[in-house]
Length: 226
Image (cartoon, rainbow, N blue to C red; front, top):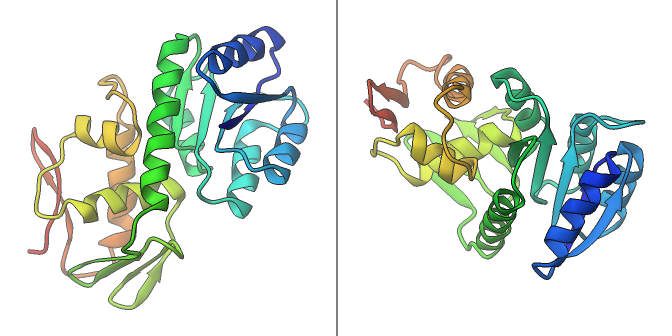
């Protein structure tokens, strides 16, 4: 299974390559963003791992441009920056997961396997249309509509809403959302899940009288029609 690693630190890149190859993956290395973008667009990789701070083109732009052509390929971002704003920027560009340096190789492997497993399930799914109340989501075209009005979502907003719509009328904790949508353990020191819930509320509920996304104090969030 082929993986592309875009990392300008040769030592780090080779460590990742060795760790992945020991698990049976085939790894291609790129040491700058421009080369990484070209490789990502030209070849059929199953997953991409990219640093954010790169020569010639940063990882945010690499991710965003690859996403335009290959919307379903899993992407993991690596960075020394770990604030909520940094994570939001990475997820908005289309990243599926976010790993802060330094990290253990076994943690990266867990993230890689989780994304590959989830992507396989998505590719094999039969139903493309999900509906709740007057909200409709097309998993194939990535179009979301409410009461017939199209709503533009970022890739991570789309995945968050998809999980809510697969689990309507049920309170979802922040821990569950982090593990199922972000494939990571919830970091209580950040509030990026709340940030994305607020993003969704503004797009899904703000212009409609009936609100669908609700907060259960101390428990989490629920999609329900009141």
